[in-house]
Every structure is written in structure tokens, then in C-alpha cells.
Image 1 (cartoon, helix red, strand yellow):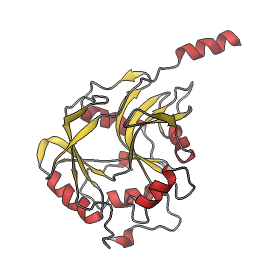
Image 2: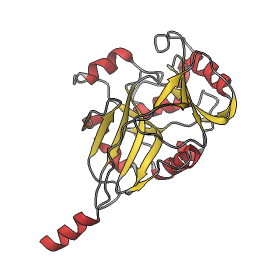
Image 3: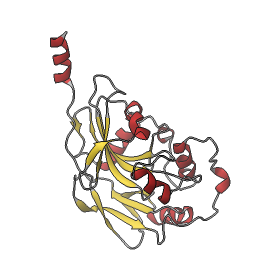
Image 4: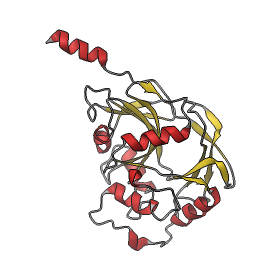
Length: 248
């Protein structure tokens, strides 16, 4: 039995040591056929390290912050492993606490980050860096996002953030109206450069983002008993994104 356990342990995929790739800011939105554009909530950026485990859907979850600090995921996100069809994986995304309209709740987020109880956290995934011990860093963004949609089963802990091709200005206008932080523009052919702040990725922030409480389509978001990622999905559906069944 000990020899069998040892062979299983040796066969487990290894998780890499990575830090998030960072974007350079831009003051104005733009359109570009070479880019994908995604909404940004303005939460806590973190890599999610899942596994390794003997079977898909198992394993521990750890988070890596922008500065490289690593620690166990909060209990809210401990079930993230069960949402990924892999023995090990590394995701990139934002940790958020959302309000009844699916927008970042700054005050509640700050409370939760200090360890206080409150409204649960969610993880908004937008990239996949490693899968079952295979590095995806050199793959183009388009291919990494396609793999993310294949292996991620959205649930209460996590949702895959969809994107729109080319139409950065349209997404920025929609995001501004919904009170989000801004948008992220990423070159479709770009590799992933861990720990690097690169012009391959740009962020465009909305002035006063996250502080707005515009009554835009409030009736489409239901805070009473609705799953926390359902609130995010309700907001996403109001944005001009490429939103297919795999993202839902």
C-alpha cells in the first residue's frame, strides 16, 4: 500500500511558481481587431492554484497575489477545485465581493480581506496558465481562453469572464454605465509573461469607477437568494460581450 501511494504521489502533476502578468494603463479606450476586451470589476487580483490531486475536482486551492504572496484560499473559494475538470490548474482572475447589482462592493470587500465574516467572495477567471502540469504560457491568449471555457464549470464560487473582440470603445461605454472599474485590452496572440507589466495588456479605468450607483437595469439583478455569481452573470448579460453557453 505504501509503494502504491508513493507511485501515485510521483505521478501527480506539479504546480509552477508564477506571479500575475500585469497591464499598463491607458487614459482612453480604443478599438482594435488584434485585441480582446474584458470588463474589470476592480477586485483583488490573484492567481488560483488548484491541486495537484489524484482525481479531477479534488485538491487544495491557494491564491497568489500580485506581489507574489501566497496563501490558502478563503473558505468561500475552497470549492473552486470542484469547478475545474483537471487534476491541477493555475487560473488568473479577480477575487470580488459583489452587491445586489453584480458590481464590486468596496466596503464589504475591504472587510472580507481583513478576515471578517460577511457577504461571500467570488472568483472571476479570465485566463488559464497551466493545466495538468502542462504550461500554457506560450500559447496565444485566444487558445488559453478556449481551454479555460472547456475545463471550467461555473458555479457559486467562480465564473469565466467573457470578452468582446475589436469593440473596445463600445464595451468601455457599457462598463461605465454599469459602474464597473473599467476594461482590460489584451492582444489576442499574446503569450503570458508572469510578473511582467507589459504593453501587450492595457487597462482603461472609468473615472470614479465602482463608486457609482446608477439605477441601470436594476430590475434584472435579484439580491434575494440569488447565487453570488448569478449576480455577476446578470450584469455581464447587459454588456456587449461574446457570451456563449460555455461561459454560462
